[in-house]
Image (cartoon, rainbow, N blue to C red):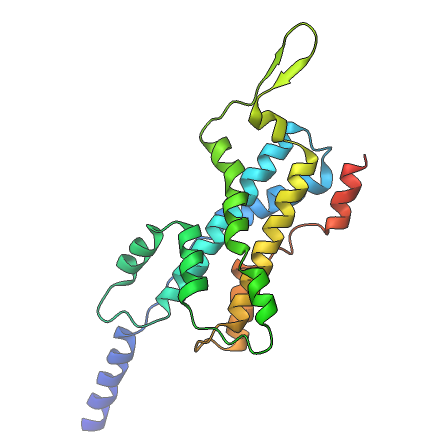
Length: 220
């Protein structure tokens, strides 16, 4: 009888300490599908390009924010609750989180110092990548004025071209490539299989066509 009481007590203790956290990835997955379909199955007019630019930014910001949030949640927080930690992490912009990650994390670059220096420009690439999105989200004019002789385009409209989209996609892929490099070199308790799962979930650009396919679009 005594043994049974102890066994029940142990079972209750295990149940009390067990919990599962789920997190929606809809914004990431839906925009991956949307942008990939637009690139592969569209003639890419101005509206398509705008949709792709916004989708790529949502994917990048939501993915990196979720990446950092999950990394922070894996470290000890004393008696802080997960939602309080997440709320505080989410208050920081995804660019500032990236700067903090690159500058203050412990990495083991070994013989990869040249790569580390090259991927340091991820920070500048993020700022450049976000600039066009900020103008779109803040309602900057996308307009044309015909003066009787020729068309004059607003600054933003003049930038919405296939060439600019190609550059944005290159920056997007470079940023995630650099983040995968830094994460691979990160000194942490995360296992190699754990890192692969993180990269697949938050740092993958596999949904995008190869840049060679994009070159074909430019030649249409």
